[in-house]
Length: 487
Image 1 (tube, helix red, strand yellow):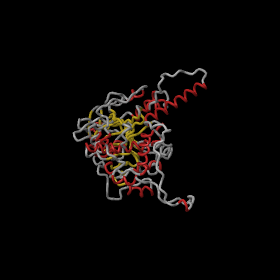
Image 2: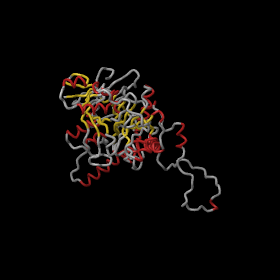
Image 3: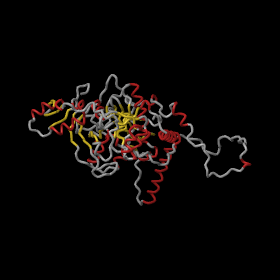
Image 4: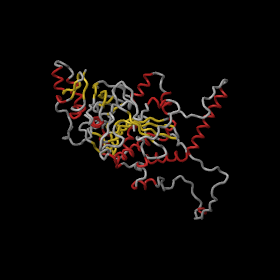
């Protein structure tokens, strides 16, 4: 139960049937248990993800690790001790170059993050704005704390929201790219070994000759311009080219609605790709907008409070990416990231993960216990999902004892078998294993009662095994706090 007196309320769905796996494409190899969360406190969800659960919208699920085809291990990164790898540094350099020159890098593989861009820095020109999603009862719409519903962002002519208390000031964020112990690695990445196939150099040209003095800037070349102006000019040129092509091929061209070019927004692109069907739009909202988490605040918590948020990335007045985040008592949990495809070559999945790690560091200064960044699930059996293990130092969650173990110790076990206990201590067990089913809380006919009282009222009911399975998965502590709805 939260400090304000509210309960988490869930409906358990079980999970005995297999379904199609999104990783290996096995038709019925993916097994998991699931429940629908009408509402949930941030502490309850923190305890659930520390037992291998994860949410997708309001649906909370837990993979059945020992039988599913691609076991999914909860992974967390130690944000305070994080050191960027060479790949992370290259991503930051590419973004810096793009922001300073307007030059878009050539499309390249983003470490397999096209499978699920679940996870996310500091570059100031690409500003980000944090907006809270308000958790309410099922069946109602979600809205932002600022009063701007998600649906309104889909309208034409949307402008960046005004400055508000929830805007992140990234000037105070940690610089994770140029820390003293990593700065030496970024100075030189090229090898000094000469190429074996290089053409031999004549001896008469090997003597040291002083270079000729420079002539300065070329007066015949145009002056340097801002990257923002270059990007605008390129967009205008593309639009003019499209208009010319339309004029040459269409006998009756349609006049433009506006003389000035209005770039397409991220939301417009997303909705354009969806069928004009309310059900499809509802699924989009359920997955990326709805959240069961209640907004909470605590004296020792971060200034923005706890709950679900949308972190928007703006560039030149247009939104280019949105990260869905959960801020919990001990971590920032990355839920999902979606972005405009025009910027896919910037590796926005990696870039946003780095920003979110820096954001976690910023929150930790306000709330010392909030020190971890959760990247979702690590799937070692799927090579495209191993990139999450590059955010070091990181831990994997043991699927049997629910203790955290360094990923370096876990990988040798996972190389042998897709499923592993991970914890090498055979005597270790689940500290919060179910011990007394009678103490589990049930919500029946709008009345909160322990399962022992519920069982007496419902003599002859056949749901004891289902409730016991649910309580075993959430653990004794959560079973005594979360209300299990029974019709």
